[in-house]
Amino acid sequence: MGYSAKAVANAFLDIADANEKKLSPLKLQKLVYIAHGWHLAIHDEPLVQDEFAEAWQYGPVFPSVYHEFKEFGKSAVTGKASDFRLESDYDFELYEPSVPVDDEDAQDLLKKVWEIYGKYSGLALSDVTHQPDTPWHVIWNKSGGRRNADIPNEIIREHYQELAKARSGKAAE
Image (cartoon, rainbow, N blue to C red; front, top):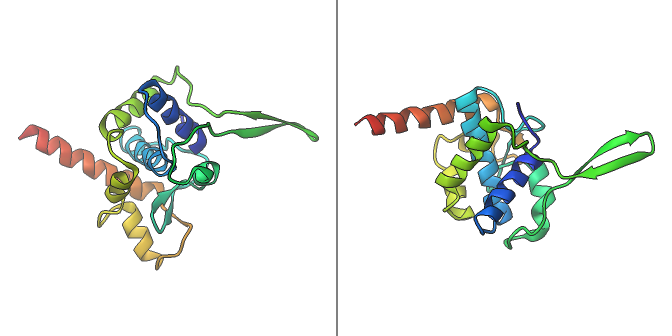
């Protein structure tokens, strides 16, 4: 089952808090993208279902996460993402989107992504997503550097499946 990009971001904020760590908006953005990629590769379905990652100048971005946390700049994020749902024509409710704790597959994947990638800075994770032949690199160059070009999930899936194959080959040696 997929979730909103904001729900995945909130899950990483919870994980970071449990590990007494802080996240910058850049690092948070990259963790959401990387988790989405691994989820596509492993489960063959998107983790983030409400929007596509887009190729921006500084890498892959989920726009809702960017806009939610841009006020923090390079500082640590100190709040969670919120969203709203309509209750009636004239009423709405604000809430914090979340990945349910009983979705063990998603929770396990998020914890594993944190374990592997959480130790790196946002800039280091940005460098990882900017490598030649990454989905961002392919779409950024194909679009001529046009901001907001969607990065298709199929390209992300194939990239992370290739990473998995490469890593399993190294483990077998």
